Image (cartoon, rainbow, N blue to C red):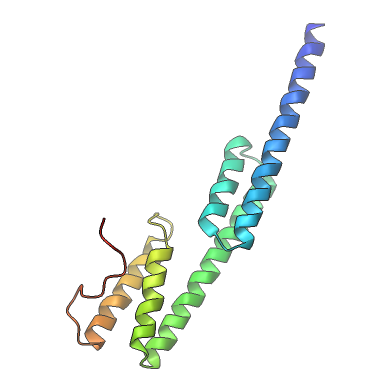
Length: 139
């Protein structure tokens, strides 16, 4: 009797975990479709907390990170093109958008640093003082 109760309880817990993971995947995929990379990564990391060996969560997390990396490459390319075309205001807008877009995490700190360096370079090209271009508001 006791082993049957345990088995029944385990089946119920497995179903609950499966349903919870299904909801997490649904939210994560929706965020990924809308290019909300950080929200999607949060969802897939949550799935990995619940089930660390979940290959589906590992795959989706890797895909979202690739999407974020590709998006950043495209923005940097646009910024470089704007600078080369002497469209400095447009370049400022692009590099500031990168700075605002990247959440301060260790993983993308280098991209953030490069964007700040580009802003400094643009300040010189535009005859502005160092630190004159503000991309983020101080709280």
